[in-house]
Every structure is written in structure tokens, then in C-alpha cells.
Image 1: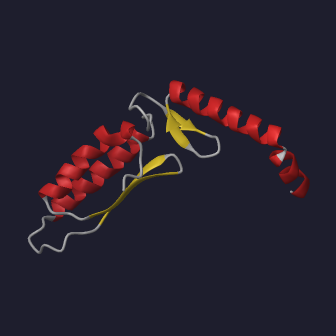
Image 2 (image 1 turned 90 degrees about the horizontal axis):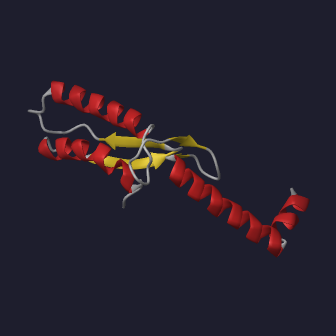
Image 3 (image 1 turned 60 degrees about the vertical axis):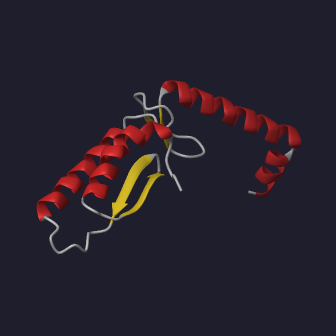
Length: 121
């Protein structure tokens, strides 16, 4: 299951290729708190070169840094944005998300649901 937006695919693809080439198990690739997280298992192959492991760790660190400046939706330059969820988005996708959030809030207020929750909290 893909746990990140398509805007980061070009950042992740070289790591996937490297892991397949050296038979390194990928445990998980996901978005968490607006950032890219890549988890791999150490290969069990006794012939695996330690230098390759260091190379992979550097690739992962570089990818996570690049994703922090890249819109998760489209791959254009972006930044970490607050909202219901933290997401790394470009201006366009941030604005679209804000508009959806406003519409959601409007629907909640029209239904009276939001007012009931505020009285309880």
C-alpha cells in the first residue's frame, strides 16, 4: 500500500532501485507528520558490503530532506503546512486544501454538529 503522495515518487525511486539491486528489504515508505519516512531492514546476505549500507543511509537522509521541500501532491517546490494534518505542499495545493477545510467547517456549522461539540469540550 502506497503511504505517500505521487509528488515524492521521483525522490523515492532511486532508493527503491538501489534496494532491489542489493536485495535490501524495504520495511516501509510513508508520509508522517508532513515528512518522508523510509525504513529498511539490514540485508542478511553475508556478502553485503558495509559501504553500500552507508551509501543507502545517505540516500535516505537526502531523500527525506528533499521531500521536506517538495509538494507531496505534484512534486513542485513546497513547504510544511499546518491544518488538520501536517503536509508538505506547494502554494496551489495548500490553497486547495484550505478551501476544502473551509467548506468542511461550513458544513459542520450548518449541521449544528460543531456547536454541539464545542459545548461538550
